[in-house]
Image 1 (tube, one colour):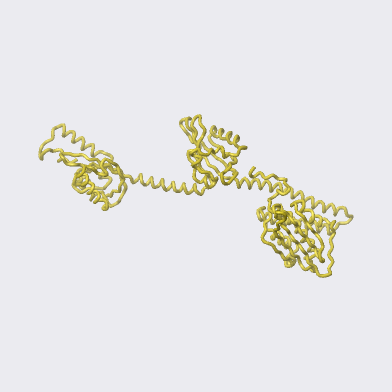
Image 2 (tube, rainbow, N blue to C red):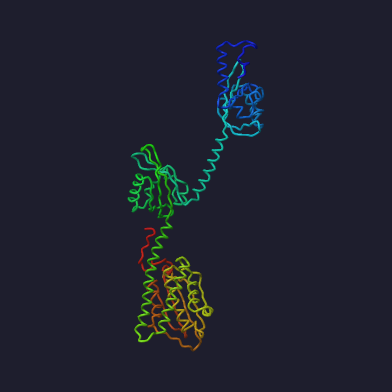
Length: 492
C-alpha cells in the first residue's frame, strides 16, 4: 500500500509501532502467492504485488499510478468497470464487491485468459480503496475443457457401444442398488435406466424365474472373489426374452461398510441363437448323413443282389451322390440359411444335366426362400426329377423341355406352397416309368415324410406330371423342426 496513506500530514513520522505494522504488512503483501492489486477510487493502481507482476507481466513501478482498466481489463469491459466504481462511490453498492466472479483479463502481451476475481472495499483517511485478489483459471479451464471433451467421447462410445456400463453399490446389511447405468441400456435392452436407479423397477424382477437362484448364487460368489461373469435371461418390456452376459469387478474400498461393483451387460441373444443353431445344424447334418448313407447302402444292396454288376444301378448311385453334393454345396455356400427355390432348381439342372438341358427349362414363380429342411428335401426330389427327365423325358435330346413353377395358395385358411413339374414330349412319344424303382419311390415318399406334404405323380400326354402341396410353414422352418426331433431352445 502506498506510504502516503500512512502519513497524516506530509513529512510526519510514524510512531515506532505503526512503522513496524506497516513494514510487516508490506512484507506480507509482497510475499502473497496469489496476485493482489489495490486501486483507489479513481481506478488508479496503488499496489501491485510480486504475484501480480508475474501474472500480468508489468513491474510494480510500471503499474503504480496507472488506470487498472488500461492494464488488465479487456477494452470492451473498461467502460463497465468505470461505471461500477462510480456507482459504488455514489450508492455504496457494487455488483462485484464482496463477491468472487469469473471474467477475462489481459496480460501485457495482449493475451487474454480467464481469472477468478474477488473484490473487497475498505477506506483509509476518508478515501475508498478496492482490494482485488486474482486467481488464474487457465489451467483449470483447460482441464475442464479436456474433461468435457473426454466425457463427450465417452458418451459417444457408450451411445454406440454394444455394452451397457453400470455401477452397483451395496451398503452393509442392505441389498445392492444401481448408482449409475449408461443410457444405451434403453436402446440395447429397452429398459429405462432411471427406473432402475430410482428403484421403480427391480432388476431382479426382470431376470427369468428359472435363472434367479443361479444368478443370485453367482452374484454372492463375485462379492467374495472380486470379479466374475455369468449368462442369463431377462424379460425386457419391448424385446421380450433376451440373453445377456453380465461381467463384474469389485472396486477396492477401505471400509466394508460400502461395496461397489463396476460391470457391463451385453445382449448375446443372437450369438446364443447362433450357437444353438450350430448345434442343431450338427445334429441335423448327422441325421442327414445317416439318411443319405442308408440310401446309398440301399442302392448298393440292390446291386449286390444281382449275379452281375448292374451298370444302371451304379450310374443311379453316382447320380444320387452327386445330387446330394449339389444341394449340400448350395446350402453351405449360403451359410446354411434359407435359400431361393429357383436357385435350387437351376443349379440342379446345370449340375446334373448341363447347359443344353437348362435351355429347355421354363421356370415361373416369385422369389421364394425356403428353409434348410425344405431345401434339402426339395433339392433331393427335384434332382431325382431332373435325372429321370434327362434320361427318359423332357430333358432328353428328343424331349421338348420342362415347365416348372411354384406359387402360394390358401386352402381352408392355411397357406400352402405348390410346386409343379411338367415334362413335354413330342406327340405320340411313349413315356413310361416303373413305380417300383427306387427313384420314383424317393420322389413320392420324401415330401410326405420330411415336410408333411402331398405328392401327385403321373403320365399326361406322354410327359411326366409332378405336383407337390406343402404347408408353407414347413417350407420356412429352419433345420430339423418339421419332424419335431429338435427342440427350439433359443428362448426357453
